[in-house]
Amino acid sequence: MVVLTGAQGNFCSGADLSSGALPHPVERMRRVNRAAELLGSFDKPTIAAVEGYATGAGWNMALLCDFVIASSTARFSQIFARRGLSVDFGGSWILPRLVGLHTAKRLVMLAEMIDAAEADRLGLVSMLVEPDDLESATADVAGRLAQGPPVALALSGRLLEAGSSSGLRDALDREAAAQPINFASDSPGAIAAFREKRTARFDGVWLPDTGSVGDHTDSVR
Image 1 (cartoon, one colour):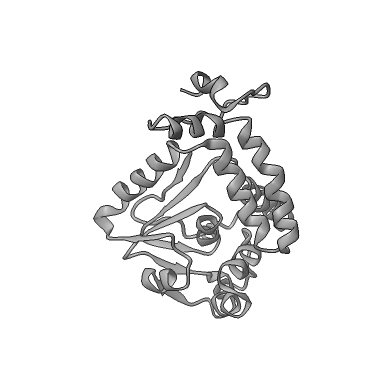
Image 2 (image 1 turned 90 degrees about the vertical axis):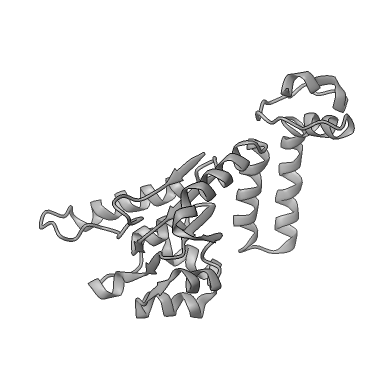
């Protein structure tokens, strides 16, 4: 579980362009792309808790997380064009998937600053809360995710991401490949817990030599 937060009242304003000692553009983009790839492919749930400004690469960093929990006072902008730059940190990939091509072009090419309500309306926020509730709402979501089945959650995240840009047949094939992994980890214990009318506990342990559903219930308690 990873929760990303900002500092001094703001989530992230993107690259620091105030310094005159910026690295070579090739090296800079190598670092940017590596960070975006690591975040986007992280195998544990990720939450961005956004307050203040989330602009440029900072906004795309939040969008690459599994959840974006935003304060109602947060502000967002794909600010690149105002600095003579094109979109980066995965924005060209994630934005069209979330809002469609034309809205993505509007956000990137006009570089508008939008408020949290508009971001929520566009589907760019998972949960919108009052400023004083941001920390508790984030902790609640993190706690609920931490109690979930880690293997199944990781698989579901990857399936949803891949499924948004492929056909039904491909999605069904990936789902069929993923479920047997769950049947050899947390699912048997969860099914046993359901039958026994108790709360399931998840730890993601691999159980390659499974027998019937009840044979290894104790190993996941």
